[in-house]
View 1 (tube, one colour):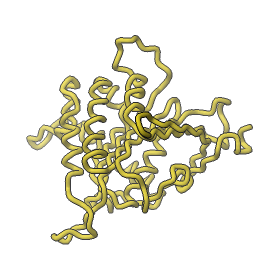
View 2 (tube, helix red, strand yellow):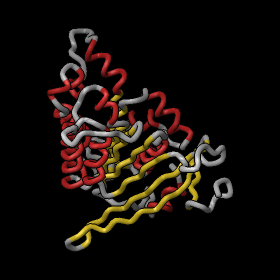
View 3 (cartoon, rainbow, N blue to C red):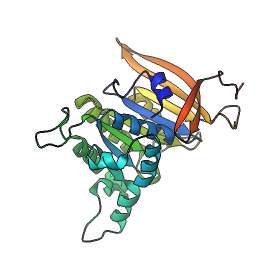
View 4 (cartoon, rainbow, N blue to C red):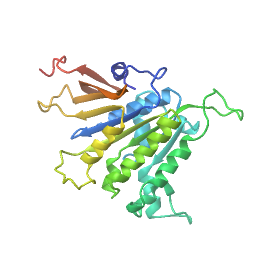
Length: 277
């Protein structure tokens, strides 16, 4: 969990806005460090977390969060964390064992045209357990508002799922978690580069990015420095707050430079770091 980023976003595990859809995106830069931040943040906030890890193994996320002071194994054991390991579960879809057909949440792997309805049903069932109190009537711990984290949506595109299907998935997740359950959604989308797309092309990551920006209330876009490589500064994050006010929508943008450390990250207002003039 990055305390400097919490200060920028004016939030903390003890006091955070519910009902937010947060988009993390990166172009030619690795934005996954922000997913690790939000994962540790919401676990510290005692939220019920459903994490769709489509890129890395559970051990990878666990090792990173351990450095941030959070135990994923313990959260999973307490049923605070529901983790879908895409690498392992995907293999079980293609090579079923013991008369199983693999995780139905990933049924789109066999036929991308079926869409992501089963994946959405998995998310909804994972976060539908009641929460609120310190301890349930059966002695089990109860958790706060539900949170969905996805790392990352570009994997779905590479597997043949259309951008329109991904947008439908994000819309239903936002309606269920943010609107109905007053929880939060955090999704990561990696864009390799600027794309030249035809007007009728709805399959590219740029088209998906535009649709997700329209849905979200907070966007964090990670990219390299416009001046090029710098050893002391790894890149910059553009933070965009989108809030409805009256009949219109108010948007506020700020740009910060960042450096990722082994156990955290530092953020600087653009132009204030001596490493970049």
